[in-house]
Length: 194
Image (cartoon, rainbow, N blue to C red; front, side, top):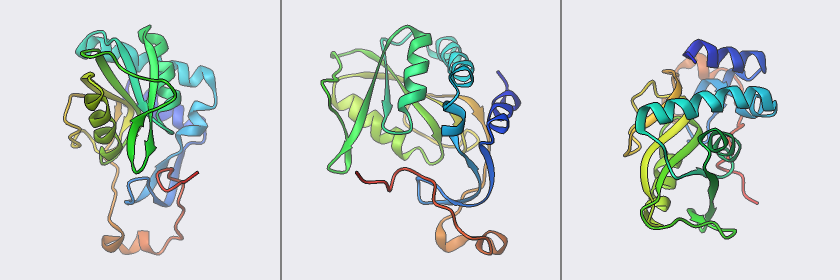
């Protein structure tokens, strides 16, 4: 599956949006990928995650388990794990950091692929990887549907992305005037608190 194929899936779902968005990372961007509109259709999610699973195996080999960060990584993590024929578990924020809960755990030395939806700065990925390593897992790779950094982000392990884009993202105090003139939307999930 090519970058264009992935973007076609986002376009077909109405999930490739333009405007002024605050991302989960806190950065501002003129482009937002509303992955939930993609993942709400099982057939679309299946196509993307099957291709991601194939790319993971071709790049780093077969993992023992897939671990995803809640909330955004749960659906692609599950579907990718299905195609990898491995268990899918996830970490959740507790006290500000990712933890295994709900009875999820890793066996020491298990080969883990960390599966995300979209990576921009890699912060959630690095935090998830740290939780996996703390639990005794061996992270063989991180994987995502879309890498918004264009391959520049460093998550500390190989990053397998189905689509790599260089999408501009700016700190709030360094917005280009044309972006600053557009009303802000905040669709990210990191600031959600339950």
